[in-house]
Image (cartoon, rainbow, N blue to C red; front, side):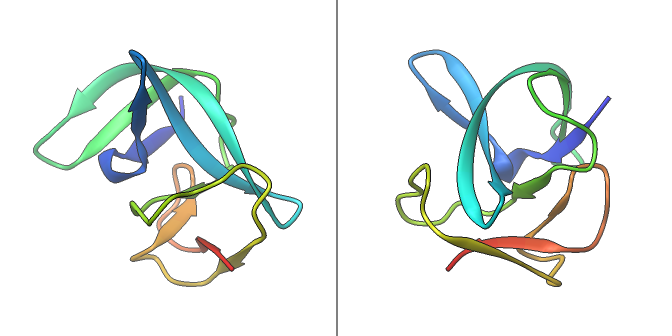
Length: 91
């Protein structure tokens, strides 16, 4: 089951979602959450996200679906789901 940092989660109208980078552009995915670990700042994603997806891990200004984005090697910003390195940032 994929695990994401809580900082990657957004909520809108009661639905949780995350942004990913796909083909150099931002994509938005509705997700269903499993267990949440507030001590370590992580949440399981039980559906809506594949293991290894490049998830935007930090809350940035207004993220928009289809906006250009690049994946950078900066673990502080984001990483593939379940991984500790790699980054996704809007360009």
